[in-house]
Image (cartoon, rainbow, N blue to C red; front, side, top):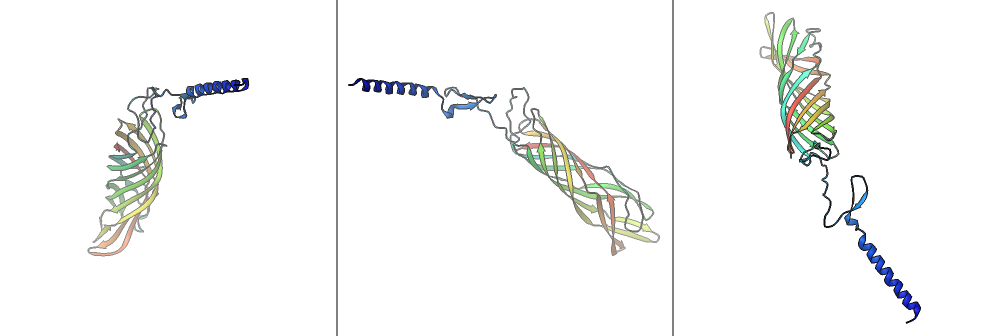
Length: 274
């Protein structure tokens, strides 16, 4: 065998040896991972690094993170909430009541009711909520035809809001929302005496669509339960109560009551995630 062939074979064997050794020492792509500092590192196949769970909406480990604070997320993307709500107003307003009474002072009182809500939250912090209050009687006092009338009307609100939650490393997550609300009114029957006549005003139903803004805070109890506090501001501008004008059993014409009314709904609920 010639010297050239011997050198060539020796070179090929040497190249194969070093090449096989080099690839044997290199980790495969499947064994590569990125550490917390953003560096590419190899993982021993026999001792793989612990897998980091993805932070999905309302989902978290019950254990604390490296900083000792648990993330305020839960096990499911959906949340069913129920609780109490107070309906308040910053303005009662004085508006004309038909053409009879001119400018009459009016006082619209506050009311307490219940609230039910269904929420959805994505792992990016964006969410949506459909909420509704139980119908509640709101008291109102006003002058009508020279008489002071103590009355009430039935009010109910259903709201749909788009939300954004500010995730952090605590169990408390604030959020904001903006959406639309459906507002239902049912006037109560009124009886007013004018001279020898007894006027009966039969209450009718009315409704109005209005924008609503929301500010809230979620507090995680555990992976399934959460307490939520929220304040909704509804810009109704005015509410309108409608009545049929009746004398005895005969009804002719209609009376409308319009007043400034921008209700604030403050709620405290407990929720379950699923």
